[in-house]
Length: 331
Ligand code: NCD
Image 1 (tube, rainbow, N blue to C red):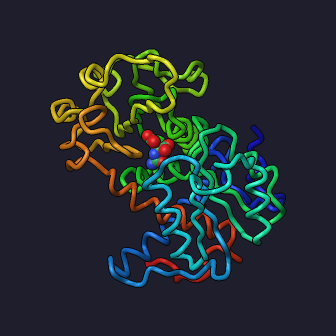
Image 2: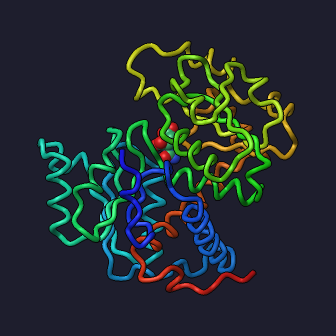
């Protein structure tokens, strides 16, 4: 899949499709921009003015062909806080359910003069397909395509990690669980590599490790205890049963016994370790409820940062100039 589709000739971000090949400077610029939006929120407080009208007059269409809670809501909030008009197409109630192809859906909505599509689809490559066929000036944001990529999730994960550990070159990060079906794992691995993480591990039963993942510089562990030894960040993944075609796994009970993050297991890790999860969590499977909302967990920080990161990406792609519409953050 072509990755340079997402960067224009002028070096600006044109679409956001994947973390693979996204230049380090651009990745850091997105994180810095997001930092300014997050600082706005901190300055204004929970009930303060949330609008930064950088995208006034622009139209964003959310096209979600797969279930989503956080990603869809935070994309919608991000667009609205930038003062864009937002349309959420109810895919199950749309003409795709009558057999209209993805391309015909794109062209139909494009004819209504929209500026940006946020797309989530079960097919790997769906966002690239849209970007290849979109009219000039129409931007595509990938909100998750099959097992392939989930770039804004990786950006918000990097943003969250950086707030706690600014120097990636010191970090050991373990990604635990169903890496095989996880677009989050792939995008996180690319982003962590780009930022120079010291060590990236996949910790999972053999059938849930993607073949050839070592080629990305990842160390593979099939047991939890050695896999988590000395790590600074643990990213847990849900067992994505909807993508499992056959019997890949032992039962969820067995998975929990061997790989679930419990309070006892957490207590053996570094005291400053971060526990992350893209959500939705399956309590009692990959994570105990107590741990998910315990003091090492940054799962809800990840959700909050999702809004700032998505605002940054949308503003960088569609805004006249980065930073327009909001004050510079106080240092
Ligand atoms: C993830 C996804 O959809 O890829 N969730 C998310 O976007 N926050 C992970 C998952 O579904 O398990």
